[in-house]
Every structure is written in structure tokens, then in C-alpha cells.
Length: 269
Length: 286
Image (tube, rainbow over all chains, first blue to last red; front, side):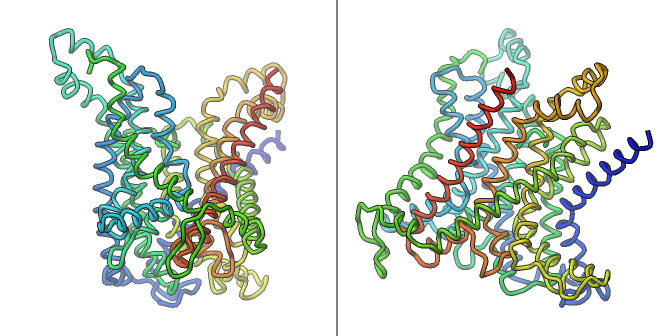
């Protein structure tokens, strides 16, 4: 019995240690953001809130954050516009090649970010040479890349939510004389609303943290927050980065907590 | 929608499908074509139909070394993730209190999606010569200036922290499906907890182990931020090398070839692991 208790204790300790390791990077950057000295030393000599103001004062971070928020919002909207009908087709449709279509729609998740990013960059340049229309380094070019990577997650979350839907309710509405359009707007849509909210927030996070795809497509004066962070880290390591990271973590945590409220996060991956 | 023909419902996926074709498949096809062109300094490249870019990769020891570093770093990190992640996933799957469970999922998913740039920054702070780890080692009197930044072990540690949440969440969702009553049945028939785990839970969770290791390995092979920031300028992995060739050296044919080598090695190894495991699994089930 005594041995069993010891084993159980050792197991619990190792599990919580690993969870601590997973949370370590997050805790470190949050802690760092309050360090008083610019030169990082452990333990810190004191604490301050000044780095948050300084981070906002760095133009790359401020513009990067604003661009990433804007891009995330637009990419989410685009992903929903493309993804919601696609999810409906995958769940409700009975047609040959449905499996192949599903694979095609999820393909952007499988192709590595750097590979897809290089290919898109080359295609943009080729397009520019052919038509004199610039895409690389422009907002539309960046937006298309973000829709490409966010949309599969939209489809995945919406498919899950549509699959769990009780169709009898829709049929009842149709039997009572509602047109297909009315059924969709007044019955189907309200029923999948939690799924739509979860899909939207999750897609936003995917766009917000993207690094590899954006790497090729940002232009001078048009940098996403992730790229701004990488560029800054090449030459500097100070508590400013902690402040930026903390703000980013707060945004992401908020989005994910709400997502988890509407859809089981553990089932998303 | 209730009255529409389910065959026509498929048309709703056409815009999304076209989007993937236009922004993923066509660019990939174009890049593959470029990988057969010849590099011409000054004018980017000249039209050709040659395999010499792939040949250059095979002949040049430097790039072989980069691939080798990428392979062993990814393999090691994935293995460590499996060993560390499995108990946590099991613990999460067996947690019944809904509050605690939700909290645990958030505690794993937020680090998963915190962004690789920010995570790398954290490891630079921890592993640097004057970092947290060095301070800890110094305080314990075990040595001075103990830095792992810009070393291979440092990259493996940072990669493990990128991948571990993916491993845990994948394993957890599979272990969730292995009913606790199966373990109880085995134990009530006289199996020790260890035997119940090894002979019942572990075999049933193998598909999750496979899914988790494939996912982690693919992500590790294609990691960008971690090798660049934690590995430093002397540590070379494939994804940063592809970026360097395409974006900085402007050698598109060779960069394209490297990208396809990276993608085929990654996907090839995952598919091989899948097939191998499936065969094993079938034999096990019989």
C-alpha cells in the first residue's frame, strides 16, 4: 500500500512538472515584462510597468499589432465566407468525390508553412511580372495567404458543429411552411451560432500568430507583429519583448477561453 | 436548405476549392517547375529542364548536413515529447472534474498557440549565458555561465516546448476514447494496474501515439523561428535554409528544390511510419 502511494505521488509530481515546463515560456515572458533593468539579470533588481509604454512607442510593434489585428479580422471574415458554405457542403452533400474534396480543403494544413510561403511568393512575383500588379508586400497579397491558412480551421470547427445538429428541427420548420431560406436564417444559423463564434475566434488566432507564410509576403512598413518580434530579437533582448509578448498572450488567451466555451478545444486538433 | 438536392449542396464548396487551387496548388506546381530551371545570377533564372538542383543537394555535403541536423533534432524532440506527454495526456483524460479539465486544456492550448516568435524569446531569456538557467545553476554552485543558447541541446529543449502541447492534446483526445471501464474490467479480472495499462490502454492508444508523433515530427522538420532564434547563425535547419535561398540569395531553382526535398522527406517518413504501424497494429489485433 505504501509503495502504491509513493508511485502515485511520483506520477503526480512528474505530470505537474511537465505541465510546468509547458507553461514555462509563457510565465517567463510575462515575468520579464516587469523587470526594472534593461539588461536582463536573474533575479531582477526591481519591477516596473514602463516597458508597456515603451513597447507601444516602438513603431514596428505598434504598427505590427494594428496590422495583425486588422489582418486577423479580415482573414476571419474571409475564412467564414469561404468556409461556412464549404462546411455545409461537406456535412450535407452526398456527391461523388466528397472525400477528395475534404482532403483538398484541408490541404493548406498539411503543406508546411515555409514551402507554401515560398511557392506563393514566387507566384506573386510571377503575377507581378505578367500584369504589373504588385501582390507581394501588399495587404491583399498578405490577406489571401492568411485566408488560406485560417480557412481550413474554420471548416474543421464548423463541420464538427454542423454534424452534431438535430435536423428534425429544420424539417419541422420546413413542414410548417418555412421556405428553405427562412429555415436557414431562422433555424439553422441560430443553432450553429456557437460553432461559428468558436470557428471565427480560432481562425483569428491562427492568422494572428502566423509567421512562416507572412515571412515572404511582408513589405517595408507593412510588417505583422510576429515578424516585428523576430526582427527585434535579432538585435535586442530586453523587457520590451516581454511586454509585447504579454499583450499577445492576453489577446490569444481571451480568444481561446471564449472558443473553449462554445466548442471543445481539446477536439479541435 | 432542407428541400435542396444534396448533390447540388456540393457546389457550395466550389469557391473554397478554387481558392485552394489558386493560392496553394498552382503556386506549388509553379515552384516545382522552377526547381527544374537553371540559376542565372543577375537575371534570377533561365528556362531549363534539368535535375541539377536536386543533384546539387545530393552532391553538396553542406546541405546533406543541414538535412541530417534537421532529421535528428526533430526525431529526438518528437521522442522526448512522446515520453513526457503521454502521462500528462493520460492524467487529463482521466480527470473527471469539469472545471479542472477545462483549466488543463486551456493551460496546454494557450502555450500551443502563443506564437513561436514569443516562445523563442522566452527560451533566449532562459537559456542565455546570463539567463534564468545559468542563474539557477550558479546559485546551486554547479558552475558559472552555463548557457545553452545557440547550442543543439538548447534547440531540442525549445523544440520540445513547441511540440509538447500538440502531443499532449492529440494523445488526450484518443485516450479520452479509451473507456476507463476497460481498465477496471481488466483489473477486476486480476490484472495489476501496470498490466491493465500495458495490455489494454497502451495498445488501444497506439493510433493516437502515431498521430501525435507524425504531427510533432512534421512540425519539427519545418520549424523556422526556433532554429533561427534559439539555434543562432551557426545552427542550420531546413526551413530557414529554404527561406534564405528563396528570399535572400534569390536562387529560386535551388530554393524550390530544397523546399520539395523537405516536403517529400517529411511526408514520406510520416507515411512510412503510418504504414508500418498499421501492419503492426493489425497483427496485434489478430
